[in-house]
Amino acid sequence: RVVKYVVLALIGLAGGILGGMGLGGGTLLIPLMTLLSDVPQKTAAAINLIGFVPMAAIAVAFHARNGLIDKKLVLPIVIPASAVCAVFSAVACDMDNRLLSRSFGIFLTVLGAIMLTKDALSSLGDKLRVAMLAVIRRDLPYTAHNAKRK
Image (cartoon, rainbow, N blue to C red; front, side, top):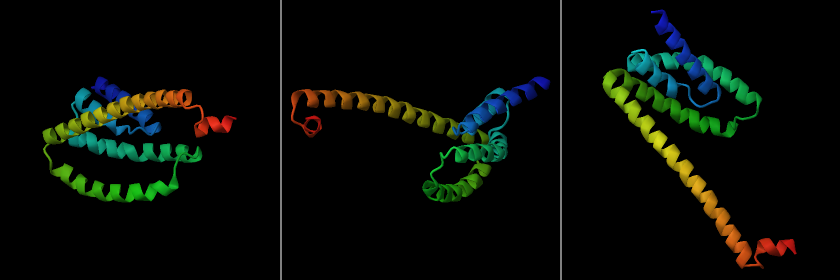
């Protein structure tokens, strides 16, 4: 029993680290609670939401103090996210734990694939842009870029 609480505390520590960095601690908390502590998916989601409130308040204070919040983007994101959150909270409460767990797993898998693909394509795109600029600057000595140097 003590081991379970130690595992839960370590999971909370990991979630706090990610939450503090603004990376969404729940993305880690929920799978770890369900996999390592046999916490049902709905319970893990509810615990995550309770933990999110103080973690988010602390993270927002630090990020705001460091000027990292673009206030023009807050309302266009928060208003629709809150409305959709209300709808899907009701949906999730009525879902079977296994279906909810699988849905969350699929979501994380797709999100991970998109992030990996985007990163790979971005890196490739950067290399192509650099190569193209090198060719243009070498082959066309009178481009606007080179004309400014003279």
